[in-house]
Image (cartoon, rainbow, N blue to C red; front, side, top):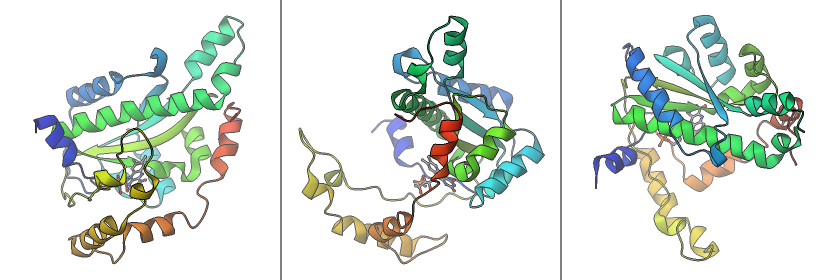
Length: 245
Ligand SMILES: Cc1cc2nc3c(=O)[nH]c(=O)nc-3n(C[C@H](O)[C@H](O)[C@H](O)COP(=O)(O)O)c2cc1C
């Protein structure tokens, strides 16, 4: 196994960072890595905002509720799914905006942004830095957009904290390959046979050093999906100019 794959496999989210600064050179390398990912039809539909203002950082951290480590991480980026550049071009050339408003373009921007972020995550981890995605900024997506002065045809997808890890959690066991890789067709029966994995996850949670729990993956999911999350996101996207169809 090569070093790249070894690094990928030992990924853990880091929520406790040392009080060490990441240099501007390193940050530039991280941004370059993010920028170099594949991008649908070369549209490059994302922007990255670094949050350096302490007041703004605190406000964003408060929005997340569950992620107070946003306040402490050395570096915090917000990844913006961004079709505003295309909107500007189209307007300047008197072309309809219909093609950037629809669900397909929303997916393109979401995927482009996610690829960029994951490139940054992999680059950071290859340098021994720790990262954590912060989707909980969407707890108040409208307020985040206002705080960052986001124009129409953009939305804040998630944040990412980066810093030098103080505490590294044990890696979380992923679904076994048999539960999610098949050949030529979707193997509904195998993909849903979670008995072995539930046991593995239960062992992981009960034995881990930080925040041990008595739960299986199935139980976790039943809790996560026992209510509809952030239904207001759709209204916000409509306000941002997307049509959602
Ligand atoms: C899009 C996305 C959003 C996430 N949002 C948060 C978050 O708001 N706060 C947090 O502490 N972790 C967040 N996470 C981290 C996940 O909880 C973590 O990746 C998952 O539990 C698996 O653990 P691992 O990354 O340590 O393997 C997020 C991960 C992703 C991919």
